[in-house]
Image (cartoon, rainbow, N blue to C red; front, side):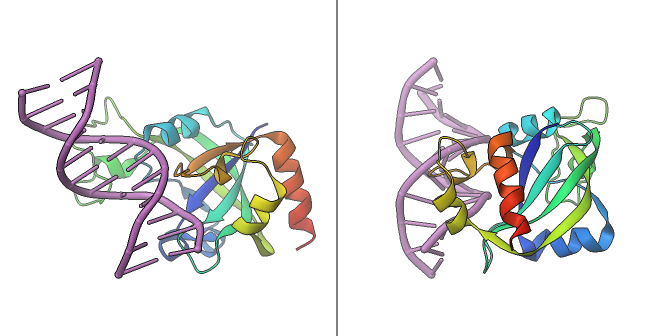
Length: 152
DNA sequence: GCCAACGTTGGC
DNA sequence: GCCAACGTTGGC
């Protein structure tokens, strides 16, 4: 089983949205590296939920991958911000997964804390200039984050 | 294939 | 709101 980190702006779709609706398709990703990470996900993988561009920045909860290799429906919708005219249902360009809410942490594992605990070599999230929104997390790092989350 | 221009992300 | 870093586009 692998671990991941999913970034989202809480104003748009935050941990509370996911908690309320229980599951969600992770749509709207339009970056090839992030898409490739989505395509590498397996059922049962766990993903940390990260709030970006917010008042409090950091990991706020946990979700689980429950369905993989889903074409992102927004790419076919001309009214969507994420519409891609070059994509067709026969040959979709953007694939994603469905996630299920697992847990909202009692507090936040702030970016500052994460920077203090991990090395950029071990954790892509804290590398300078990193903008990737779907990030693989090494097991070693993931297990430590899970422990840190218990103490919140 | 190069690279300048432009758009976006995301922390501060 | 600013701006550094990065990704994409398009002319050549």
